[in-house]
Image (cartoon, rainbow, N blue to C red; front, side, top):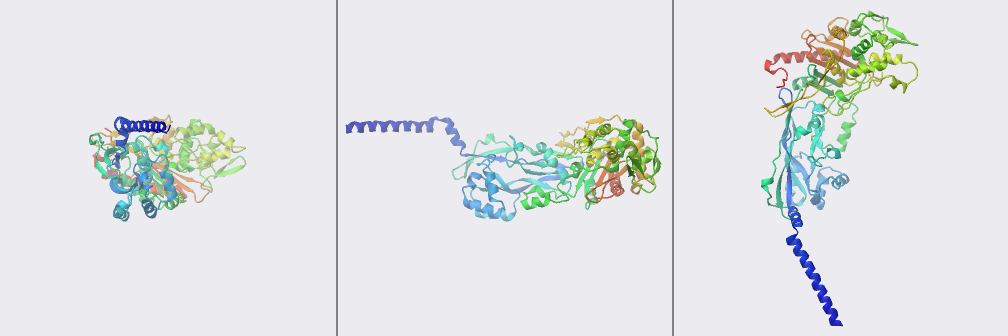
Length: 587
């Protein structure tokens, strides 16, 4: 009995041994898939980041280049198993432990790949890592490209880079933690600037030490990103930044012939290299909560009442509805009775007397526009303003542009009861609920200068390499059917604003270049009124528009003096150029 049991156990053990031996032999010699996976476990793929495309101004002046920097990386699966490495990071990098651990455990992070903790580390940190060497398993220093800013100018336009962490940013080409454009032109043209990654492969032993290269013939070289050339004139941009450095607001200079933006600034702003490194929570709070809003691009995001610079649009809307002709006169005794209110003109002491369309523009007589308000259909007025680009985005190649607000009858029915004449009176002179961006005012001024031709404002001129450039298509235009006779009166009225005694910006008259403009004052319930001045020049053959918006500037005549300086600087710079350098011509 016992002998039988021993034999049975022997045969059972022998069978089990044979099964295990067969399985081991199978795994070692026959399972090609597992063998392939085993080999891959020893292969490290190293991503080679491409050099990002450079950014130039319209004349070929370099704005943003690249330079090498030392970046601090970890490989999470190694780092998290080494207490010394973790202590070193938390002691030296000022990173919150809970935040980093949560991030490293997120599904988007590849545990066996390099993960960047800090860009452009200083020499002290670099030396410390090198000194401790093998103690800091899972910590690596890599020499890589970073942005080098040649000038501290136009931060809101140029933008900055940041790490890709949002799901919508991650693609086949972009991995978690990659540097991508976050704001400005770095964001809009990220695909052009970014280039293509390359890779190398190497075999590592179990200790992570390189044994040899792997399949070198399959390695891929990184492809450098394409350079982009902007429409911005750096010399003009920096001159305006100096003029406006102690002010708050926006200035825009546009080539009215094709929509190119020659200069655009928003003040106050921030140092252009602010985001070249990760900001601490304290630094981010300081900048993001600053009441002067330095991170905010007022040129395309700020919404303000336009004041009297909207009066040319009001005239176009009134003539669209056959309410006014150039010869119609209105008596201005200093205001107008509308319903049970006497609404005053800005010239309260005696008013302007009899005014027609021309004098209403250059003297900026409010009463003339109150007379329009009591006759106009508000919905049709809205349609006329929308044709001129208000209430919608201009389409500029920047992120976060806002469209503003043009109210209509339905808007007020939902909010107020009673007669709308008082509201309409405010709207006709650019006060009340009507809200615009400085760029909308600039583009509308270009439409007037162009006698109805509207271009899409843009900052990109071309991209690529010498001999194979791709150009921005500036043929995208829209010709508005505007009354040429009325446009002529409007232009003459704007000319008199600047060049005739009694004009509201006569102090801005230039003896170097004739330009036409319109002042505006926007009521501000939070402090001093805002100042507007929008213009075009030279008067006979317009080439540029200059729009100045100064927060708390009180009156548009002061903004007009800034515009005068800009015109004269532009004129002098233009006439210093060799003929071949003038303008940017597409092939």
